[in-house]
Image (cartoon, rainbow, N blue to C red; front, side, top):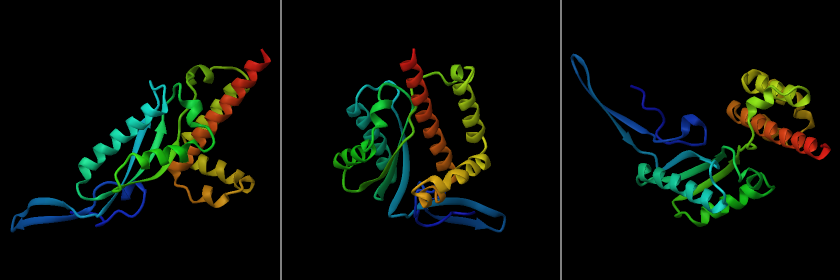
Length: 207
């Protein structure tokens, strides 16, 4: 029986959720029962909130707060540290991608939550409301862009190599270097969405 650490310490996937110890009852024949006891005073969690079908930030706020309420019900007396990952596609994509929006949304979440809940960060991973499969079949620059990102996103080693190649051009190099493989793939997903928006906007202006 491996109960893990007594207390989560970060947003790493292995540190999220309930932590504690195991009470094991056994006799000469082996283990009779295992009772996992939750002990952590602080619980690290992440929720994903999709913008799909929403047309206002207020509705997105309600969706995120509902997710936090569910976590609090499961966490018991432990304080919560929550990361909010905004995903999906829809009418709000342009709004949530605005400079500074993530910090504003985190402040709104904090203002509407009890003091036992701390919103660690808001991560934006939405994408334009477009059909990626159609774009993959598009000839020219857009089709090649989709293929390049698909290769990188589908291969963590390729993603690390790609980000490493451009690291010298990034002003906040340590912020890129210190990210997990999962976070690096998320960066590439976001970059793809931004690049596609610019290309599609340019094509529309040229027509």
